[in-house]
Image (cartoon, rainbow, N blue to C red; front, side, top):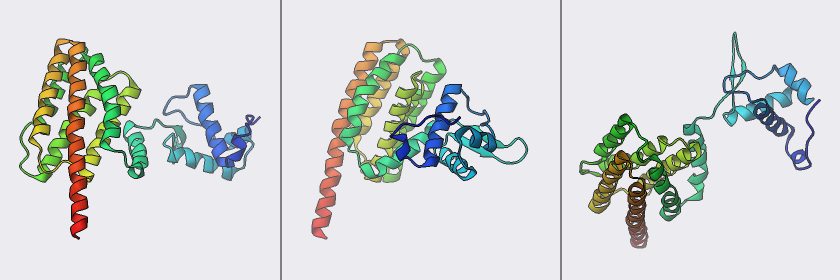
Length: 256
């Protein structure tokens, strides 16, 4: 018997309703990634829908990355786990048109990253600490040109993505990594990375070095304080760069 539908669900198309019902079914049954969905005929019988509706529902789920179809021997439709990279890419498509500001991003970073740092103090392995040291080293040499500066700036932000990846909290890990990647893309797209800013480079390097030391010694309060100061300083400097680029753009338009 097909599951009952609510009034709000009846406003959705049939394929969308079936896709949502399949998602709920998968969660209720506790199916893991890699498990095969029932056959098309079984789905038609369960949901009381025609073949075309079932196929369209599966296409919707594939577009969302929640199932994956395989052909040939052993083929079928399988539960699929959406990767962090794909989820971030889809969310990034939304912000492609939303145009978040530097302040928008740093308000969230300032709230989340100090707590992340405190939670990791004294919990990281020697290999993880070495990885953070290596990322700092990538951003350490002064950048001679705009292209090199973009690479250096990306490495500086990658430090925060790497740190977030070490968290056991999947939601915190995803949000912080996404914000770091979004800021990296915005910085380059809006030309905020060039020309080289010695103050931004030096303060960022100093804060990250102090942070790793606090993480290594297990000082949670120091880690929280260093990260909070890092976020406040970076926000101030990036805000001034954003304002400078805007002024330069308006000046160029006025001359044009």
